[in-house]
Image 1 (cartoon, rainbow, N blue to C red):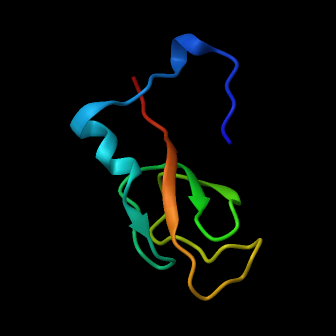
Image 2: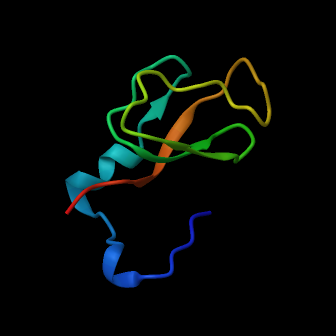
Image 3: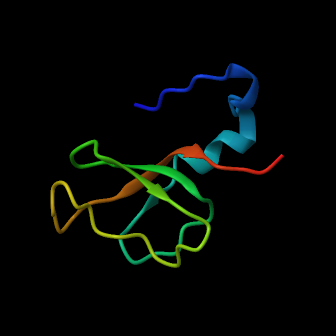
Length: 77
């Protein structure tokens, strides 16, 4: 679960734009967005920065069948 302290710098995404949060990513794939990704197997969250060229395996559960989902997208104003 993501928490924040400054509601003026966090926005909810709705409609068509929210579909990016439904996509599941496998380790080794190049993510489209930097941000916080959540392992769909164990719930572990990891930060993926702009320089990331491939999603890592989950360091918490080490499952062979994990998928990541974007939880919070990082964006410049």
